[in-house]
Amino acid sequence: MKSIELLKTQKFYQIDIALLEDLGYEVLLSHKILDSLLFWKYDILFSYFYKYSFFAALLAKCFWKKTYFTGGVDALDANYASTRNYRIQVLFFKLCYWVANSCIVVSQSDLKNITQILSSKKKLSYSEHAIDTKQFFSDAHKDKLFTTVVWMGGEGNVKRKGVDRALRIFAELKKIPAFSDYRFIIMGRKGEGTAFVQSIIDKYGLNDSVELTGEVSEERKISFLKHSEYYFQLSLYEGFGLAALELYVPIMF
Image (cartoon, rainbow, N blue to C red):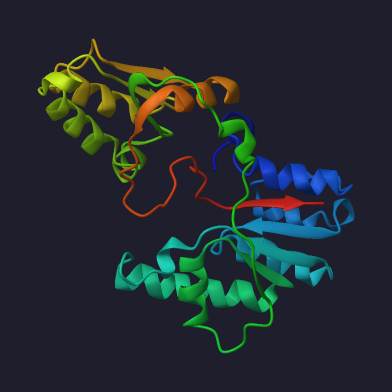
């Protein structure tokens, strides 16, 4: 991750951070491995994802700090990852497991893949992603809207989230009278991938019916979701569409 500001603008792992703070911990955010050398500033290293975070955890372990890991492990799915990427992820996961006090697994699919490569499970725990569902319950009327959420930091992420396919499908739906006056709202921070999205919009002549909102507040995002009749989720390998954080981000407290 290039900037810690993404934790604020993209709301990455805000629930995790809030829980730690509610428990009385002071939470320091970092995306630099060498910050784990600042042993006097933290008692526990809480690392996301199981690759480069190993090096931060190893340094923390040298100072007798407790280390915890969490986050998705997509590359442990042999049906998705290439053989090379799968083997690299297996190696890094085992290294992370070796230095960890505990690994908090966040999905059933990850848990299944992990148990296939470990002989000991004593440092594993299972905790699904949590969300405050109350704010999403609504009897609001539905508008003629399709929505999706994507971070357009790069063309690759746009394709991985299936936005290009969603636009192609939307263009076909618009040819059907029942969908002719529907609109497609694409929420998410703009970046290098925005030009790619715009080129598809131009290709299919959708400028009058597709809106790129850029970043929106949590309240506006929820409002769009409540009032939308359909939600596009065509991601290649996710079961949800709001997470964009896929690089190492340790939390020290």
